[in-house]
Image (cartoon, rainbow, N blue to C red; front, top):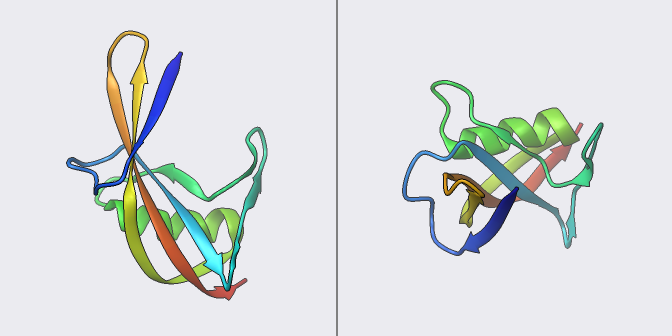
Length: 99
């Protein structure tokens, strides 16, 4: 019901969600989420939160990861069959600590 296209530029508007590829050395930390399986930490933005803050919060909540440096990687454009569009910001980050 939805197609996704990755765009390698920062999100031009407030996204509905953020996701992060947290690197621990040369490895990406994944989260095992009920109903989703193994995936990178991701989730919806909360009120008053920007995309980078959401990425950091989701990394901690879903994978126990404390991020150091984060950089925007781009964004996903998610288009529904009815033509409506949502955007999700994508970040890459370095892991400072695993908790």
